Image (cartoon, rainbow, N blue to C red; front, side):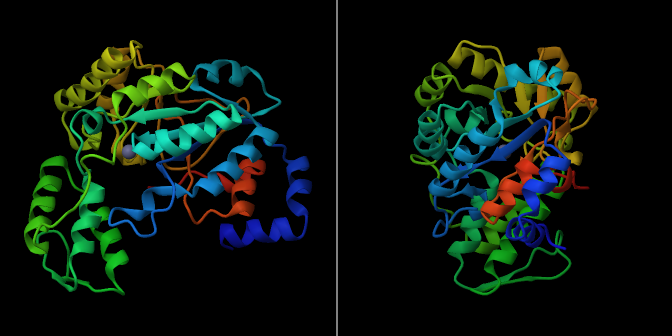
Length: 335
Ligand SMILES: [Zn+2]
């Protein structure tokens, strides 16, 4: 049964609270967001909008009532407390709406969160590859994309197939080593006519905003410089991305980078070299992104702390099921 259907059924029948009292939620649950607001008309990657302003506000209210919302500095204490559910609210990348909408809502509810920043986007505002891919395909009225070196068949783009085509291209990009991914994107620019729009002035936070959030009780963590998929790089290149990010964060916020989130974050996106780089820098915890949660008393891998993606299709019943029944609704995925 689909998780949304199951969550709806458990809610309608009143079984969710009953089950939650038999399987009380305990441990540490990481939630991950990217953007807040309405992306339904954006020419960028719409899957990045995790929740509307209203939905995010409802989620915060629910978390405040039903869990202990913590920052990563509290993880050690939370591991010792085996009776409560501790929730980490995290955001990746550094989009402007994180400051304008998410931080504003977190302040209203007086809740902490962690923002993992790809420092290159703040220093040199530009479209990241996922938004560029979406924008290139949206600018194309209709056509067939021939990417013979990478896709088994030409990809048709029209109003009916556009969103599926974007998802296929994003998945292809993520599967490639860094050099080939750059070639793939260059080829996509050529075959689409290269008309990506946006990304300079209004996409990312500024360092002033980041500093204000840090002063306001938010934790700022690292997410590389260029949002590189680390496992596609050799160890020297990984070191440049991770240590360069740490140096920029420390210079701008005055605090060392103690926490890190792997770009993309699936099982195959980081490796032993990534862990060695984090260790050398004294990073305390690093977060992945393929589902899961840490049950009370469970062993943790400090460089693979699980997080659950929060997506716009996760409705209220589903969100409450994630929080109340993590043992059922927060499984780790294979990818
Ligand atoms: Zn990211």
